[in-house]
Image (cartoon, rainbow, N blue to C red; front, side, top):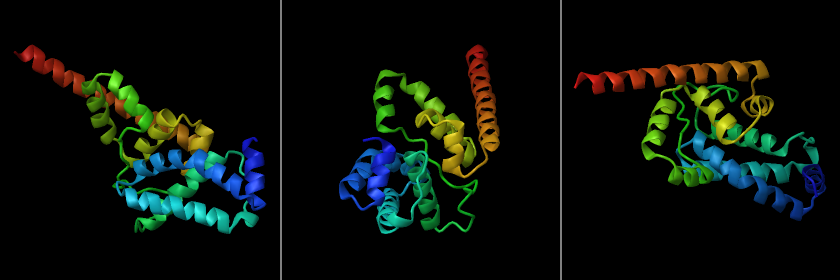
Length: 189
């Protein structure tokens, strides 16, 4: 069964299709949620709430072009709603903690890469504003296209391009500053 058939069967009340949706998307949603919030219990509660709301409102749901993006956006909005943030659900505040902890797949890669470089990259990413960290995570860790990122983050596609450009530009500047400082230290001795 393809994604649209599973979604259609789920909307018609098929519990097996609902379970397939959960098994296919919940792990990715949980990892994404853990990037948005340090509180793993909150993420689990929000994940459960998203699936509860899906089942409860299944007859009234539309047919999303990409189920994963639809579910990621639903989780993101649920986390923002439940984190006592006073801001609009369409925007994360700049002081919102978007974590840069590795996913399961990244952990395997981390074992094969230099730990020092990972720490440097993490330090650089932590210096980006929350929205820029989020767009970098969605693009490079979740492999979403700019169009998919715009759906998940509730932005125009042009804004996703701008945000990605600004994040990469800032990372380059931070990288240059870091290595300039290292070179100065090395040549000072």
